[in-house]
Image 1 (cartoon, rainbow, N blue to C red):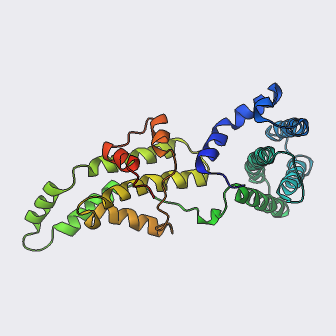
Image 2: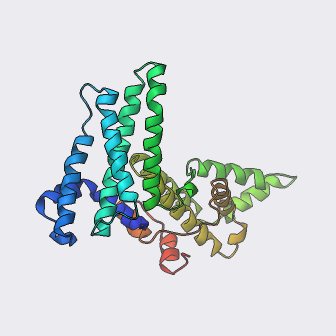
Length: 287
């Protein structure tokens, strides 16, 4: 049941429109009448879940939502329960997880206003819900434990500082540094700007799922790294070494994949990709 990134992206962007389309018929999805009925029931339920309670009472409000959602998620994850359309099961499960995330946020905000005794009483239920959410997300994103906090920020500053430290030592350090700066590959600034633009996009789109953010970061860094490796003296590149260090810190140095449709992804979001990176991608250097 695992989805590729481009499928996740499409679902992420269309989820609200999907709910509206439930009222207009499911002919284009090819679902059975049973699936259509099931979807409509779920749509009504999740519409209620998404509404914050005016006067929230844990056991009269969030607790009921919590119990229903845990039951639904367990049902959807049960391999012995058959829904006619696998696509219907996947989409309904995603709706359940989105609703569950909203309830977690609402319930935690509510608990912050209560005394410690009330928090101690309710937190086990929230932890149980979080576990159910994680189990559900693992259906969509296997091996999510490989997700990491990969840093894109401050790469330019780190690069320039390392350049000075590496090439300005010794009696002739000043002249060596000037020579190195003169001979430095002219595209480095464009490559650094590209990574900064990717980081800016991620900062502006906080709603992206962690796995989505991971794949976007990996794709950007790996594209730059692969392009540098194809250069004549690329194995000695300082920028490439810094990228590898960051990937190593995040535990993902061996994951050198670039997501399918990455150039189109950037183009749709007005992220400029340097010409040499485009050429690297198009010439089949992506693993």
